[in-house]
Image 1: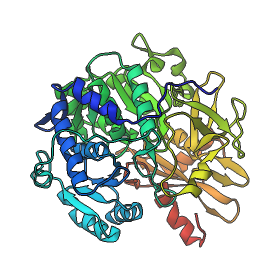
Image 2: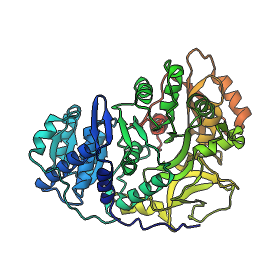
Image 3: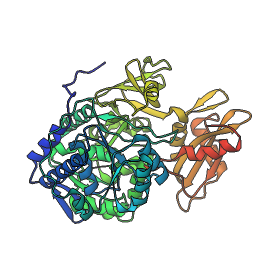
Image 4: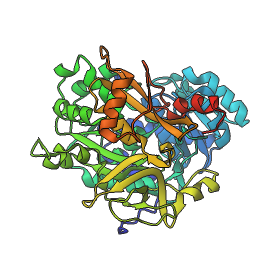
Length: 525
């Protein structure tokens, strides 16, 4: 059923201005020993906005930020928005060649960059043709101060509409060329509204350890309206995360599963005080059920699951702390592993359906593609109406994920549609096989892919990383898999590896795993 919402079709900028006024004297951002109040960030971002306008930057222009997490990077992103521009976050973990390609294709007029990325930024500016380069050091950013000059600390007056693009993050590119996702002002107004609805009025301290070029940055932006204090780490090193949680009394953080596993395995974890935590969100990839149960024990009744994507951030589905725990004890229904595999239910912003190949909803319990409606769904792909049309049908946004909804409304993500393996005419969902593998004692990580087979068309292959000291064999893993998921879904072969390749945002890179198998067979993937 479609939902009734407030009027989100307006600019996000008044939300920012109100936050700067309301919380002016509170600390807003911390990075190491540096601390900025909301008033400080207001003045710095306003100066960036005015300096941009002085350079001819106009509403609707693109401003790139090529930087690891830092206070300065966040401030200049805000300055781009307050000048009426579009924030283009550039992930420094991507290869320079990939980032140069994205920047030249989008045509950023201004590119802020840390010194470490000066060479790639210069090459991107050359490819664009007329981009302005602005170096930014760590706070207090002497190089930025030089560029700002005497720019006013009073924010310029800028008119933006709800459907205007606010940010242009990129899709992961694991199945093709990264696409720019047009996240609009109305999207962020809706996300902020939803975040405020679940706020309990208590002060919040958010740890920004995951890249702020992705969900971490969007979460930080929408949380300014509740006076959040942001604790920014340059990189998600386990020791730094543990130290920051305890020192700054962190209440909220988001990490992908691999980073959570690193925390669970860190020798300092048993002696770390996690009592300040209120919401520890996990997502971006499926999480091992045994490891999730371990996280319950270590971090307490604070884990928050969910499902979102760049095209529809954060709020497609969520499993809140109350869905995991009742009065501090694990919820009775979650004693069953199947229930824990759910990403939750529809959120206050979303209407979710499972649809067939014609984008028509199917009955509960039937597998199909997960589709969503809601005010957080992006406006489409930048300068790419053809790809936009592929994911917008019958009023739905098609996520590209295969899933199912049970009779209680719980949503299960089974696999990426493009990761589905067709072997001997049967559909095998790699995510289901991976979960079975992760239930085998001794397996730390697993990826399942389809590889060419003259007999079956494709056959199932697993690539596995074992815990140190484990002596599992390929034969043992295959035999256990057959018991768990049957012979059709069980891997026909297993590679034991020291490390699995990862994308720039930390996901296992299945495209890289598949590519050489298909290239050797002379077939495309």
